[in-house]
Length: 225
Image (cartoon, rainbow, N blue to C red; front, side, top):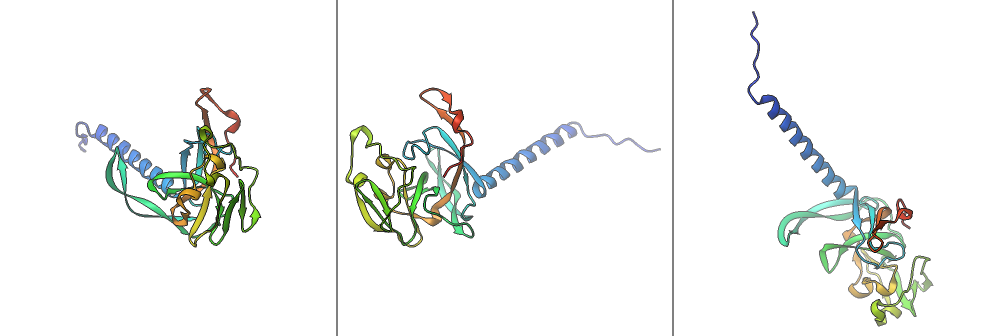
């Protein structure tokens, strides 16, 4: 006569809790991998890319548009404290960076910050701003996205009017905001290392107007060019 096998008290509950914990851990790891290597969401905090991107726009960025994001040791700050972690370095494996692409990259002046600008100059290009008109290789390069709204509070700098000529070094891109008079960009802090590019902006998935306290429905799903 066979004997019934009795389950240890709390066995089913413990097994269920363990399965839940494993599922959560796997989901977190997958989310981290997707965020690191595939796509990432960003929020627009300033008006330097108006009118293409507005404050309160939330965008999706492709992390593999130009190649593979290879992990490397780094130190990040959590609640102000340095913590050993990793960031990534772009290794050009596929894709082509084109003039006019909207890119997200690590700010050269502070690698803990991400900036979003438009790539206007590629390695070897000769970039110049003449009387608020952008020239690349002596050809006018201002697309319909470029706007000149004047400096904040009426402030103007010489680099709002004239800059260069400047030849972009190898391994670098020259980045500018579409809102040319109100953009802190490569005119001030230099070119962006291609290895520090985190991805290419694809589309707006959410947009909140903080002044009207309402959703900008017409911007949802808008592709970025």
